[in-house]
Length: 101
Image (cartoon, rainbow, N blue to C red; front, side):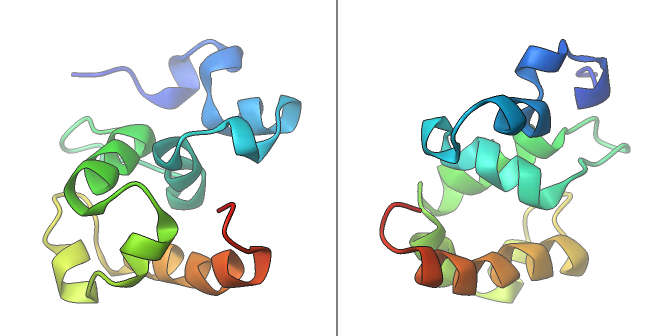
Protein backbone atom coordinates (compact mmCIF):
# COMPACT_ATOMS: atom_id res chain seq x y z
CA UNK A 1 0.00 0.00 0.00
CA UNK A 2 1.22 3.49 -0.81
CA UNK A 3 1.81 6.09 1.84
CA UNK A 4 -1.01 8.58 2.41
CA UNK A 5 -0.12 12.17 1.47
CA UNK A 6 -0.13 13.39 5.11
CA UNK A 7 2.84 11.11 5.79
CA UNK A 8 4.88 12.64 2.92
CA UNK A 9 7.45 15.37 3.60
CA UNK A 10 5.66 18.72 3.59
CA UNK A 11 7.67 19.90 0.60
CA UNK A 12 6.19 17.05 -1.48
CA UNK A 13 2.53 17.51 -0.52
CA UNK A 14 0.48 19.23 -3.25
CA UNK A 15 -1.38 21.69 -0.98
CA UNK A 16 1.72 22.70 0.92
CA UNK A 17 3.65 23.11 -2.33
CA UNK A 18 0.94 25.42 -3.65
CA UNK A 19 1.42 27.74 -0.70
CA UNK A 20 5.10 28.11 -1.61
CA UNK A 21 4.96 27.98 -5.42
CA UNK A 22 2.92 29.28 -8.33
CA UNK A 23 0.19 26.97 -9.67
CA UNK A 24 1.87 27.37 -13.06
CA UNK A 25 4.70 25.15 -11.80
CA UNK A 26 2.32 22.27 -11.04
CA UNK A 27 1.40 19.35 -13.23
CA UNK A 28 -2.26 18.80 -14.05
CA UNK A 29 -2.19 15.71 -11.81
CA UNK A 30 -0.99 17.81 -8.85
CA UNK A 31 -3.69 20.43 -9.42
CA UNK A 32 -6.31 17.69 -9.64
CA UNK A 33 -5.01 16.23 -6.37
CA UNK A 34 -5.61 19.58 -4.68
CA UNK A 35 -9.16 19.71 -6.05
CA UNK A 36 -9.93 16.11 -5.12
CA UNK A 37 -8.53 16.58 -1.59
CA UNK A 38 -8.56 12.89 -0.64
CA UNK A 39 -7.69 9.53 -2.05
CA UNK A 40 -9.34 6.16 -1.59
CA UNK A 41 -8.42 4.36 1.63
CA UNK A 42 -9.74 1.00 0.45
CA UNK A 43 -7.34 0.89 -2.51
CA UNK A 44 -4.52 2.92 -0.96
CA UNK A 45 -4.71 5.43 -3.82
CA UNK A 46 -3.80 9.00 -2.87
CA UNK A 47 -5.42 12.08 -4.36
CA UNK A 48 -2.27 12.45 -6.46
CA UNK A 49 -2.65 8.86 -7.71
CA UNK A 50 -6.21 9.74 -8.76
CA UNK A 51 -4.96 12.86 -10.51
CA UNK A 52 -2.36 10.85 -12.41
CA UNK A 53 -4.95 8.25 -13.40
CA UNK A 54 -7.32 10.90 -14.73
CA UNK A 55 -4.55 12.63 -16.70
CA UNK A 56 -3.37 9.34 -18.17
CA UNK A 57 -6.85 8.23 -19.13
CA UNK A 58 -8.47 11.47 -20.29
CA UNK A 59 -5.72 13.98 -21.09
CA UNK A 60 -3.44 16.50 -19.50
CA UNK A 61 -5.75 19.50 -19.28
CA UNK A 62 -8.90 20.62 -17.55
CA UNK A 63 -10.32 21.42 -20.97
CA UNK A 64 -10.07 17.76 -21.93
CA UNK A 65 -11.71 16.70 -18.66
CA UNK A 66 -14.58 19.05 -19.46
CA UNK A 67 -15.44 16.84 -22.43
CA UNK A 68 -15.51 13.64 -20.35
CA UNK A 69 -18.95 12.53 -19.22
CA UNK A 70 -19.86 12.12 -15.58
CA UNK A 71 -20.46 8.43 -16.26
CA UNK A 72 -16.98 7.96 -17.71
CA UNK A 73 -15.36 9.74 -14.77
CA UNK A 74 -17.31 7.60 -12.29
CA UNK A 75 -15.95 4.47 -14.00
CA UNK A 76 -12.50 5.29 -12.58
CA UNK A 77 -11.95 3.33 -9.37
CA UNK A 78 -12.13 5.68 -6.40
CA UNK A 79 -13.78 8.50 -8.35
CA UNK A 80 -17.42 8.81 -7.38
CA UNK A 81 -20.08 11.49 -7.64
CA UNK A 82 -18.48 13.76 -5.00
CA UNK A 83 -15.10 13.82 -6.73
CA UNK A 84 -16.71 14.21 -10.15
CA UNK A 85 -18.59 17.30 -8.97
CA UNK A 86 -15.31 18.76 -7.69
CA UNK A 87 -13.71 18.19 -11.11
CA UNK A 88 -16.69 19.54 -13.02
CA UNK A 89 -16.90 22.62 -10.74
CA UNK A 90 -13.33 23.48 -11.72
CA UNK A 91 -14.29 23.77 -15.41
CA UNK A 92 -15.97 27.19 -15.11
CA UNK A 93 -12.92 28.42 -13.19
CA UNK A 94 -10.64 27.21 -15.99
CA UNK A 95 -12.75 29.17 -18.47
CA UNK A 96 -12.55 32.30 -16.33
CA UNK A 97 -8.79 32.02 -15.85
CA UNK A 98 -8.00 31.45 -19.50
CA UNK A 99 -5.82 29.06 -21.49
CA UNK A 100 -3.01 28.76 -18.94
CA UNK A 101 -5.04 26.33 -16.82
